[in-house]
Image (cartoon, rainbow, N blue to C red; front, side, top):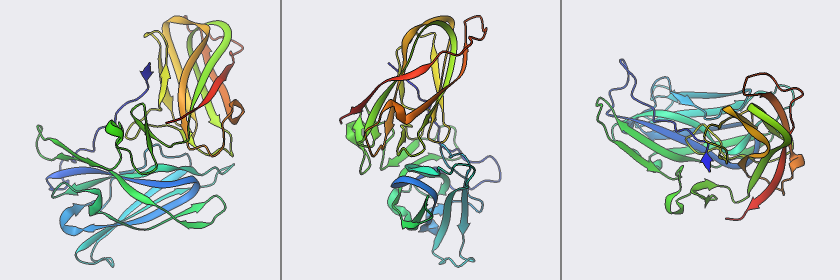
Amino acid sequence: MASLAACDGPISAPAGGGSESPLTCEIDFRLEEEGRFKDVYLHVFHDSSLGTFGEVPECESPRLPPHSDLLARTCYPLENCDEATSQLLLNLAHSSLGLDRGFSGPRVIARCAFHAERVPSAEDFELDGARTIDLDMNWNDASVQVSSVTCVGAGSSTSTSLTTSTSLPQCENAQCSTGKVCVQNVCVDPDLYAIDFSLNEPVFLGALQFLVEPDDGLYGSFVWLDGRDAPWCEIDFDPSVFAAGAVRDDGLRLGFISPVGFTCPTKLATCFFEGATSPLSPEDFLITVEDASAPDTNAIEPFPTVSISDVRQIIP
């Protein structure tokens, strides 16, 4: 089985004019609440002697949901902060555009660069005032945690990577965060489903691409490995065929390419979905074939139909 995954490297020290701190760290902030939200915000406090997020924080939201923006700003002692502490404000907001689906949780809402004097731990950061706004515009208290801290030494091409973490992308010895379980070396929600995608028509293909969109009222999301930019999917194809996934809200896009072609009917891929609050069925997903062509690149029309051939719950 081939797992579709690509690692993200740690944030490196900025070139010229950057922080003179000996370590550049990458801090992940994870919303632990389940559901769909329009907004989440929190304040992060830390001892000023530990380091700084910088005057202009370098933050990103992994798998940023469509029509969403991440706001990050720092508060220094001159801005109503205690002289011994520094503060970071994080706000992930979803702007309504058409059918408002918001974004799902749990998820890493922000990944920020931190210029440190020493290797910090999750306990060095005090998270306060975390709240969410749900799709009905209700405010709720929320649980947000520092889920990962990764640091590299600055100013040396031979620096050693130093890592502390409360949830690991690959859960060796079942080291998963609270509420997660280890399945095939991946930390996931207990409500995990395997979904098989198949093409049952007799056709010879060189390329195929399709989009999978969960129903608007469906809770949960496809599993995306922490710190990676690809979904947890497995394929059984000849090595000349490869697949790549890309996020579209909580959906999934899969593509298959083979210079020598591949014959259908066949099972295309098995992808994993977590966080569903009720049993899943094939009718919970809309599949749209976006491209199909022969090995000579001539389009195949009409497009063949991709369907979900099996949905099964995985019991950890």
